[in-house]
Amino acid sequence: MNGIARPFMLIAVVCALGGMVWGIQMSASQDHLLSPAHGHLNLLGWVSCSIYAFYYHLVPGAGEGTLPRLHLAATVLSLALLVPGIPLAILEQTEVLAKAGSLAALASMLLFGFVVLRSRPEKAAFVHQR
Image (tube, rainbow, N blue to C red; front, side, top):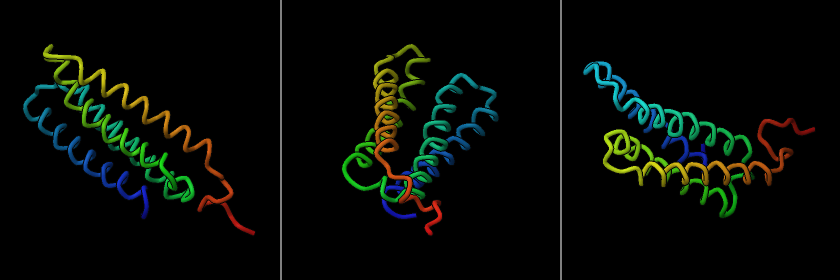
């Protein structure tokens, strides 16, 4: 995997490992209070970033230009804000990070939507060329 697909996949793997360790810790301690943050780490980190990585890998032209880099930045920002922000909100310390992370996650998905809309499927790796 090359180009912008690679950092997305690396982030996905790190998030999957973090989510697994966190899940094991919650299970061992029988304390599942922060499971919503664990779930968001797995869904936005592992699942979404994996999907992004595979899309950019299968449609190489989609990873060109500024828009995919903005998408990556928004994704990293959303994870950096939302994953610690949810526990802070659950513990009633502050909701600011969770709210900002949610907006960054929305921006990330909107950017990905624009990337998909502007992509040319005929340049996709999975389309058979005659």
